[in-house]
Image (cartoon, rainbow, N blue to C red; front, side):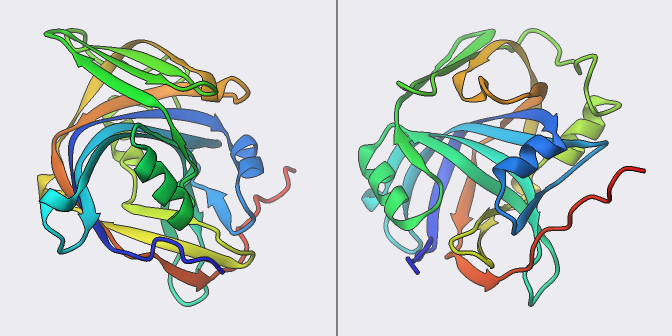
Length: 249
């Protein structure tokens, strides 16, 4: 079995936006290995798409001067797994990552299950608008955020209020993958929860080619204030299969 996430890494996320989408539970289940189940609310599963800039990504303990800085975008599903030796774990399952640093992409595909591709990623931050863009040949994306407009829930949201959505959709700090049948690899994230600051933002318009063949509905988008992260060395554990929903009727 290949090593997965063999090093504990550290970096500083100085710009970060998180976009969340609801999708039918069964649609999410079809995208997941049998060791993972979607985290569900009122019959819906959820995507979390991040666009962020990471400064000085490097092994823990290495000087910042040896780190690499880059833009990273990733499409993740909220999931739960059942390791045999501990309580269920929730986190994010990566289906695709884009980054603007070929070295990060090559190392990421060698050592992780985050499915890296190389793409140009830009953020143009104006006085009242932020324009985000992923220039990828197979999964381009763009979003315009209106900082002057108040965020609102869509009429078909799975939540009753912005506060309910924000509380539920704050992801659990763990990356989860399935390196082999019957196992899960957990990459726990250390962050100072007291330093976590975010604000909801209004998405004026957005296009995501990645979702062309997926049924998704936008929920909320939030911008995260700069924060230091530590991605712990991955731990691979035996895991049981997911719990299937009871048949209707």
